[in-house]
Picture 1 (tube, rainbow, N blue to C red):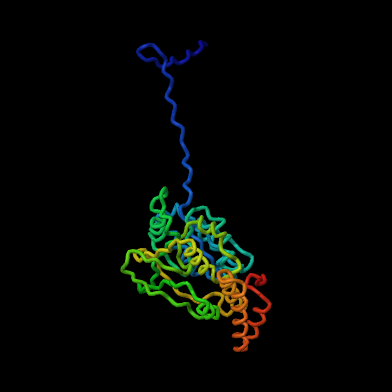
Picture 2 (cartoon, rainbow, N blue to C red):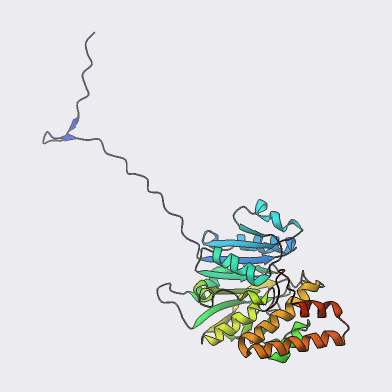
Length: 321
């Protein structure tokens, strides 16, 4: 049987062989790092968290948004939310360690350079996160270093302003708030393009991660309360601004504190306020603040609170310094 002849290579008019064209190699594109990390801290707030996560999932540039949910030892469906939202990053704590520690855990985990601290009670619009990021970081090469943080205008279901914005509290105002009173609110002129604010609660605040790092993260002596006040005071001390943009909006759904009525949470609120006073006014001021709180609780025959304050008990199981 004759052997088959090998196929002749293709030749060009000069007689040189032409090799078959090679297919270009497929280049796999590296996924882009997230631009913003949204951080939610929740405790027994599954319905609110679902609403907040659902809204974040519909954000513009969702592929550049990381969603981290910290569950503080909930006993409801909160612990299973990542089964329904597989794209989120769920961080489960064994018990309630306080908001300051929970936010620190999420902040250290976050991959983005911009951090969006958001309450489960806030529902963003599709453009809220990206619009805030554009205001804080209009040009990655030349960021506006005067602005440390930005926030949207929060509105209620009817569209009325609902942002919780305060002046930096005095010691007397902090003493009242430690017992459960509301801090004074600032009335906002929403006709302005932007408003410099002193102290927004961490319902919806976007901040650069390096600033949180520069203050050595959130001071865990504050437990569950007052880390937001300390952040505002640290920003003021650094000579920087927090800017609110009324045209950027999110909906605030007010709800009761899931820790309302918890005896340790009440003590934690007072101990945290005393720690805040001590941080900015000295140890003597902190001791005086705590003594006034103990005497006030005695006057109300609130012996449970007295015992927890004198024993230094805190929500996370530690002892107040």
